Image (cartoon, rainbow, N blue to C red; front, side):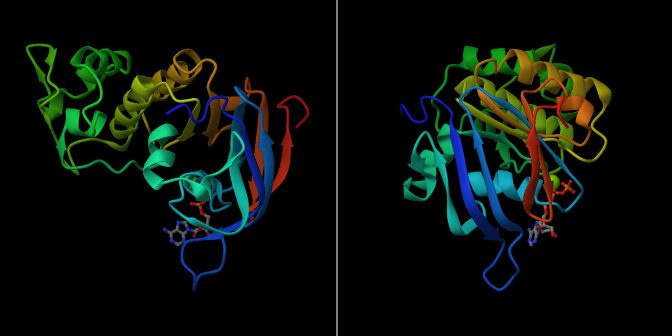
Length: 234
Ligand code: ATP
Ligand code: MG
C-alpha cells in the first residue's frame, strides 16, 4: 500500500511483444505523464494502443526499456502489487465465472455498502435485468456472472465499478471498439471525469472528440508515439 502515491508515469525506450518469437508491437515508446494528468491515446487500429496499456500491467513483457511509476520500475514489483494498485478497464474485459461480488472484490476487502454504491453509480442495476441480477429492484452481490451473460459494455461497467471502489491513483481505460450503446458510453465518460478527478488517466479513445477536453493526446503509429501534445496544438 502507499504506492503509487502520486501517479507519475515514465516510459523509456519501451520495446515489447506478445511472444519471444513474434516481432515487437511496441518499438521504442517514450513519454512522461505528470501526476493527475489526463491523457487521451489515439491511433489507427493495430497501432499498439491496447498493447501499451497491457505493458503497464506486465500482461506483455518489456524486452528493453523501462516503465517507471512514481520512480519505481514496475519490473521490480510483485505482479500482485502492480496489478492491485493500478486500475485498468480493458477493451474486452475478462471476468471470472462466479458472482458480481467475486468479480468486484476478489480479495474480500470491501464492505457490501461500498460494492453496492459503486454498482449503483455505474447503473448496473437496470443493465443487469437480463442476467437476473436484479430481484425486485434490489441488486444482489451474489448474482451469477458467466463468460456470456454480460455484454462487452456491461463488463466494462463492472470493471469501472471495481476501479471506483479502490480509487486508484492511475486509471487506464481502453474503450470498447464494438458498439457500446450511447447510454453506456456517456456513463463511462461522465464517470471518468467525475469519479476519478485527481487520478492520472490514460484513456484509449476511438474518437478524438471523446478526449478533446483532456490535458494531452498521445498519438500512436506502428508501435511508436508520433505525437504528444495538447488537443489544441494537434
Ligand atoms: P485497436 O484500435 O483495433 O484496438 P490497437 O491500437 O489497440 O488497435 P493493439 O491491439 O495494441 O492495437 O495491436 C498492436 C499489434 O499487436 C497489432 O499488430 C496486433 O496484431 C498485435 N497483437 C495484438 N494482440 C495480440 C496478441 N494477443 N497476440 C499477438 N499479437 C497481438
Ligand atoms: Mg486496442
